[in-house]
Every structure is written in structure tokens, then in C-alpha cells.
Image (cartoon, rainbow, N blue to C red):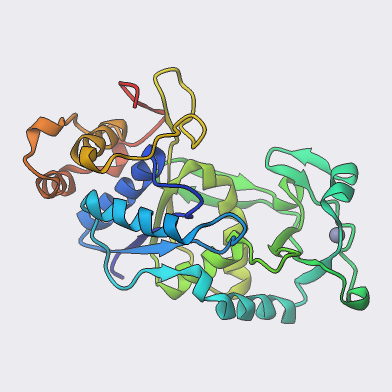
Length: 298
Ligand SMILES: [Zn+2]
């Protein structure tokens, strides 16, 4: 089976160094294997996204020399597919409506490593009284779900202990990331997912959904989070500045170096295109390990 990878940014903010890092790792891994690389915009959460941010992300990627195959997929245009998947899970009696408010859960639920652990309050509810606003949750099994990550190694999680039954569609009607991502990875025939380690603990939930929906499971590689020289994770908070388009070559070299590849500098290349030609030939995923630390402040 030929390699199919993807980069799937959520347009909640402009592309920053951390997202460029995962985009680059995913791109190089796909291209170095002669694979296909797709771009997907995860714009389901209409309360947090802006159309102009989507355009800015696409423009920034293009200016950094990324070339995607096939049409860009926008999740906001695919709601019918997520609804079908939800129905398939419902037919298997795996889902149920939940009317718990955030404040009720904050009082009743314990907090685990990934936030509140749903206590199962509505687990045996069949129907919702009088069309009350409700989320849809999926029953999770009380067993370890394990997978072997190409970078992080073996990772196991018991979803019942770690988070409880999780939400597939929010009370405001917005489909959850977990559902949409497995539907789209399958629809796009994704064989390899290279993404940030902040999503590592989401993967067992996605494995579970793939199992229940009878979908193929991609190979995963979770790239460690980049830290600044002080060891703080780079986030939109610690890195308010978006990438400068006129610094594309310098940014790509910093990203390359941060990914523990043989060091490069912008002066080694006369164009972004030349950087990519070199990078695709010299990339090795196996060098990416541990904490990625930037040699210089960004
Ligand atoms: Zn509930």
C-alpha cells in the first residue's frame, strides 16, 4: 500500500513554529517515501475559527514551499459524513444522550490527567426528555487500548479510567474532533499520521472509534513538542508571533534543526525549493526523539 500522509491544522490561530514543526515532519516523512501528502482544515468548531485564518494558514504553507496533493479537505463541509458515523455507532448501541451541564460535571466528576473523567451519569438513558439540549457520548471499554508509536514507542490507555465515556457531538451540535478525524483519515485513505505529541493521549480514543466503525488504523508518529531555550513548551501563549513569510527559509532551517536532523542554515540554500530537495533526501524520522529544544529563541 502506498504511503498517504496529511497535515490537519485547526484554524484557531495563525501557523506558528510548533505547527510548522509538525507540518514539516509530516511532509518530509511522506515525501521521503515517495508518498502522497494531503492538507485538511479542521474547522468544525465554528465558535473558535475564522475563515480568514484558514486562508492565512494555506498561504503561509504555500510560502514555505509545501505542495499538497489533491483538493484541500474542509471538515466544515463534511457534516453529513460525521452524522452517518454517529448513526452507525448508535445502531451498535454504543452511544447515548447526555444532558449534564459543565457545572454539574465540575461538581460530580473527578479530574484525571486529561481533564474531567465522565462519571457515567447518563449512561443508561435511552431518550432525551422533550428535546432538551444534549451531547452524544460513546461508551468506552474498561480495558487498555495500546498501540506502538513510531517515535514514542508503546502507549497504552484505559479510556474508562483515563476519561470515561467521551463526547462525539457537543450539546451545541458541533461534532467532536475524535469522530471527525477518524472518519476523514479513513475517507482520505491515510496510512501514516505524523502529528504533535499533544495528541498522543487522544490516539487510543481514535483507535477505539476505528475498531467500532470497522476502519483501517494508520501508523502513528507523535513528534515531541518543541520547547524554547528555557524548556517551556511553545504554544500560542509563549509564541504569540506568527511565522514571517519573508523568513521562510530561516524558519524551515530552524525547524529542521529542532527535529534533530544534521544541522543546516539558511545560507546553505538559495531558495525554499532547494531546501526541500535537500531535506527530502536527508530526512530520517528515527532521529526525532526526546525533547526538541530550540538552540535559539524564536
Ligand atoms: Zn450526562
